[in-house]
Image (cartoon, rainbow, N blue to C red; front, side):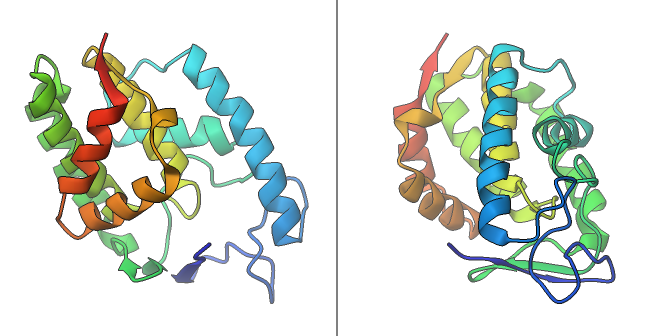
Length: 199
């Protein structure tokens, strides 16, 4: 699995390590990863049963992140500090421009009425676009994938569609997400076509 490379004044990791500071006091990456998966799986089940009310803006996205990660990280629900965040060949939005770019994306989404009342093909097309945009933002130091998937699941419900990520190969979704990050949405739309049904 590719690891993040971070550049900024905020010290997210224990000194001399790549282990994120955490409320559990764990200082081994593998142990933290296992604990994180167990805890976030439970939190995602809670959100599945009780989707959040909200405006589907940046605050909504941050609240989803907070619920999923608040038992693990002090900075759960807060957008990342610092300059660069990279993973593999992807360089995400610089920290100082996150709020400005997020405001543009979420304002556009509001202008499109949160994708409500769209025919299925149009809904999939626009959903793929916004998934690419939020991925390019990568607003959190960790947990962007889980947070954005839950956010878009809830956005789909709000638009009277069911988005079922269990129907999607994780590897294929990752590849399609990277392509969407680079402005090519075709594969992501094909994948979403398998995972979205009208309520």
